[in-house]
Image 1 (cartoon, rainbow over the protein chains, first blue to last red):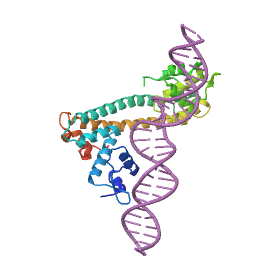
Image 2: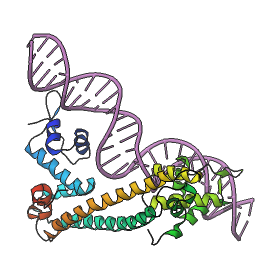
Image 3: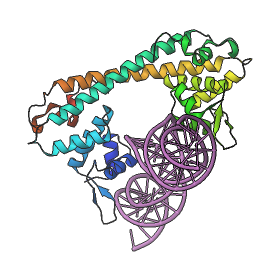
Image 4: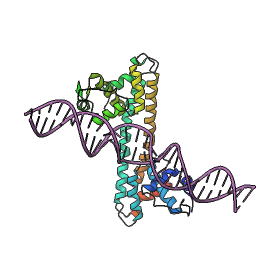
Length: 138
Length: 138
DNA sequence: CCTTGAACCTCTAGTCACTAGAGACATTAC
DNA sequence: GTAATGTCTCTAGTGACTAGAGGTTCAAGG
């Protein structure tokens, strides 16, 4: 059995975040010492590692909730789990696509001005003021 | 002179968002009718277009504030503007990089399970539970 | 056993950029 | 004149935390 600080060190999840996950129902309510401090065991550590890993991959708290539910019922179909993962993947791909468009536009705009002039002549500012100066939709 | 709803239509920025921008100081306080409704002119339209364009490109409200300040002083050096744009570009590039790593990992994980089995055997869930199943850091 | 200092507790409020809703007033079209 | 639509302010909610206040508990050293 170890403290919340120890759990935090082992998982690299900050202490207030652990408490937050408990409040959100991702972690079961921890056992307490007689002095009301949380104590965790291996199961708690594994659960939190799962959560952290999923968060790192960008899954929402809600998605993680569903994934945990499935994990707790190993006999159920895992279709929902693959659905969640697939939709997260699509999400990530969509974000990449959008960001790449932005990247192109921003880099074009940035190149247009070396920062040595005066803002009345600045291509960065002109581009922002006038969407027609953009090469593509974003 | 036109109403906030009209401005909203022309810029595709929602009415409450326009009011929010005003509150944040991105838009000057609008003139009002005798009945206290906001009225806008061409200048207001241009300013909001600028803001929307910058937001679309991912600039923060704070960054936009600085950009607007520069825009209002056409005699000042535009170094700050190019700095803001460059740092935004770096930001976008960093995000793309991270998302690409996630994409690879997620797609690998997703492929590992077709959703037809039972969650006890699901590779998606197993991967999330055990970081060692990952091929790279993320 | 006592003290000290770090770690822990709960609670509230703040972050960012909006969005939603309530309840009241203004404008416009017919 | 009336009805429908638009607008006003204000408060509160979103997601996933983060920060801080003010108080309690724990572990180690003396």
